[in-house]
Image 1 (cartoon, helix red, strand yellow):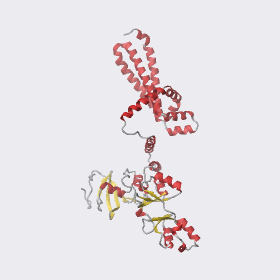
Image 2 (image 1 turned 90 degrees about the vertical axis):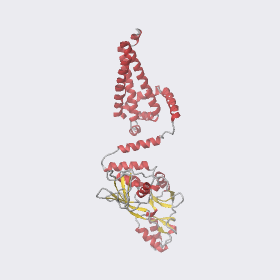
Image 3 (image 1 turned 45 degrees about the horizontal axis):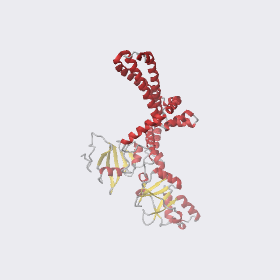
Image 4 (image 1 turned 60 degrees about the vertical axis):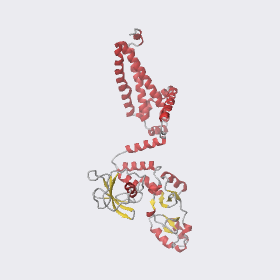
Length: 443
């Protein structure tokens, strides 16, 4: 043992130094946890109300990589110095065995008082803690800034050597963070469930296309522009829709859109005589859009053009259906039309717990109403999903099981599935991978 070592590291002084360094380590641990766990939304609100510390914390979060690098660097430095001081002091006191004693003692102290305890404190009340210690955190980040930037530069180049794909953008990370927060916003009340569905739908606007929510051409009510104007007037007034597409020569050749209000104004100008109406002059030009347009883009386009109605076509220009502003709004707020006991048209709950579902019901409506997780990418309607999963045109009575549900075909019109019975899948009763025969026997 070196006698001079006792002068440099007497045990009482070493103990005081170690405790002081542990306090600094605890500060850095609290700062790290509080900074990353604090609510950006609440801090933004405080900053907008003039809270200077909240504004500085938001700046730290904007440069989070550099701030965390400085905090972690400072934390590791004080932990290493504390371990060195403890090792020296215990070697002085116990000889070579002091190395083992130092390792055990410092591990316990650092884990308990330098990591777990302070991080728990920082996590419990992150917003208040980070606002309280912000001046010290900002000073540390400023002081260690050059060193932390150098460390970040080295780390960035090392990561670049092994990166196989680009990291997620800030926009993607923010969206996923919002989705996680929405899922946490859970409660049994129906109002909370509706709020959660609305928030999910808003985030999905950029990922859902008009082809997934449009009114299919088989369900579109269209009128012949060349027929008697009086007949058109009668049909238009009896329709529940205010905008009706007009075709010429065939139902897929849409040449105009008739607005009921414009027709009534024209009828008044014609002295109440419908035979004087010229439909081609009353109707507006149709607006054609591709089925791949996202709901977010289409919503913005509706606002720019001050339109409420668009005709959806595929890549070859063939008619697929129509979409309205109301259709997009219903994706967010749910069905706007008058509601009955069950909110999705075409879905009828049964006493045995199953559902009778029309083939044209969209998968998104089912997922929204029944909290299912059926994929809506391969097909827009439930009939399309059954065709996609089964890879066949099913017979009446045939049963398929996938995605945890049992699908029984009850009605078919030519190659189109018209009606399905959907129920929860019971593994004990049915083989998951099999489909039953048309007679309904399990295979």
